[in-house]
Image 1: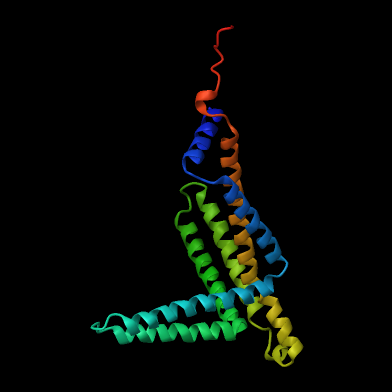
Image 2: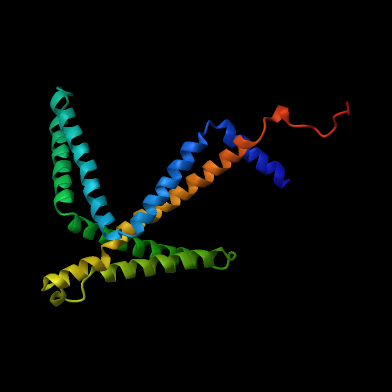
Length: 222
């Protein structure tokens, strides 16, 4: 039964049109980039903020161009233009001050994890007594809550005196600046691993002989 299921999975991979070599190479590239990112999480955070600014800027320029040369009779054309200008302003802030952008994004991440943890704890006690699944929900809530509290405690400085010197500010930034970079690096590793698994599965099917060329085991002797 297991062999039949594996064969069916390989048949699905083969019939899906996957080019396993490219998928495998892309997965390995993402794994390498993820490993490099693990060694430079702080700089990965800074670069990701600047890259986000570039993407937002492209979106703003697109909206400005669209509002300037199209939709002549549209009443909301001015609003369309203003939104594009807001995008450009946000892009300039992200590119010019990536550390500040990373700070606020990290604060929002901590707040999201704390809120999600509290909601999961509430859900766990709501479904308590309906099986063991509530324990998994409870543990997930505790982990989310602890992660949010730890990130928030790393972002918020212990006192204003710790930011009075350049050395203190540098230590404060490095205390939380790795968080977003670590998340991006782990995401690259996970995506790379999934693509490698997909490519290996497709390559194994490609290495098998065609279905019609396999012997049945009942050939008559010559």
